[in-house]
Length: 75
Length: 226
Image (cartoon, rainbow over all chains, first blue to last red; front, top):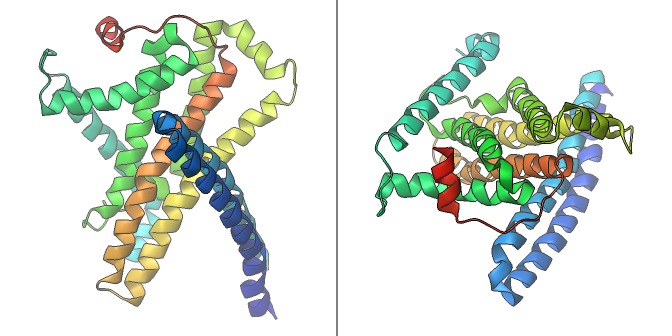
């Protein structure tokens, strides 16, 4: 039972978050690339904003990773 | 070997950080050893390229305080970048990046947040900085603590995660695959310092009020900094 929980708890914590973050990152990247092709003169600014937005989304997955590791350690 | 590494990991992290810092000091001395020339050579070009990006970021925060903000941001960026790049070195203990152990990123995040508060205090005054932490939103103080955690966890998650994956792949398939993983690991190794610095910039920008004033030629600020 403990082994099964050890496998499932991190998986169930991480996978939905990773899927949601991937969808959010897809939206951010496609919108930023769209803007860069439409207005190449502000591509630098858009790239910076895109990186910050991607980092904020990615942070959620990392928080979940930490929570998953803590839960796995408790089991 | 691995037991010894696990036992002495905190010390290895400190030694590797010190090695990277020493390397940066040597590179900095090398880059500024000769006086600046009108027609920059390769070394001066590289130094100006790095400096230009930080000047642009610092100008967005508070143009008159560029000489205070740029060294802080550039030191953080270069220290994290070179620490991350240690992972590609084929030397047994030296290849452990200090940012792949949670204490390393936590120390860097604390330096970033405390440094940002000190810079804000220098620009706006100590009283205004203390007031900014409590007013208009008293939860601003909690935000500063969570900012430290988010900065450190993000860096640790990216670099530590890549390092763990590379170690596992090396155990499973010793040849070929680790090379691909290390090559892919160069992307977060270069992007994460930029993200860390940009988030510190945004943190500073919220703490320091923006001042509108005409932009100067970048050369004037560099000359004044010297």
